[in-house]
Image (cartoon, rainbow, N blue to C red; front, top):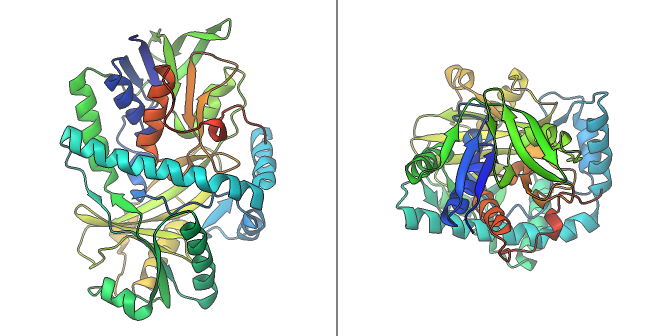
Length: 415
């Protein structure tokens, strides 16, 4: 049965939801508070990462976060503040940093990432899209024996989960990347991973959807939601009111603000990430994460991207120069012949990734509202599992059996 669906949020989750809903024959409207040309969906590392099987909420992470709290250039920076929502999130995050949570999350993270990677391939083939999609794997570059041991241990866990992983010596690393000098003792290579250029995918998807009849309303902020008997009857922006049969909440870090209006306690914090683009040939051909620095390096279409940091400091787009310098300095430490220029640093951009306390996304319906499907909380995997989330959203709204078990993603789960 054809339904009218309003998707709140025009990032990769919102666009992929709109795509698969349209494919199911629904009439779709996308509303976004921005001009839909920036934010996390445009400034991310472009990774498709079945390798990222360990959730952010892992043993020792809270302790490490507290240690890094006093270093504004650290890979993870959690700014303490007297905000009830933040305190609740922090408490739930700390409770989730357990071996049990990691064990529960590994198969779910693996399955949704592999599913989504296949959907990226299918999308490109079916719609004749031109966006970059390369399967060169992902290197974890390590400068110390300690980090090499830690990454090898994670690699062994990934192998047990059925993912192809190889450990590379310094010599093997040079053979893989002969055109750039790398300062590392060795690396772990996840052969299952792929990479893309985000802005190219986003532009192609927006063009396709607009031509297919999906309606876009940009620069409109949803300010009110009318609910009757557990059902949304309309949503109102700063410009007009929209009615529909079904609604999708895919507003990223802003989803928690809108969910409050429905009495849904969606624990989310915005995790700010930065990116620097070097629009020149640096000789880097394989995506890498600089393990000690937690900086991502991606060869994209026409440039190389350096991205990183997780800054939990509320919803804002303020640029912290110390964190920008940390990314640039890390690039030079691992690639001694690579020097990020002041001009490249001045063109930095940031985006907010919605982080749930246990490291798993919220995908599904809340018991408090029967015509709302929530799709948020993807943290650093939003890009990687965007198509899978969109497909699952369309299956939920179309009353179909979902491709994956959604219990672990339940928006009403307790922490």
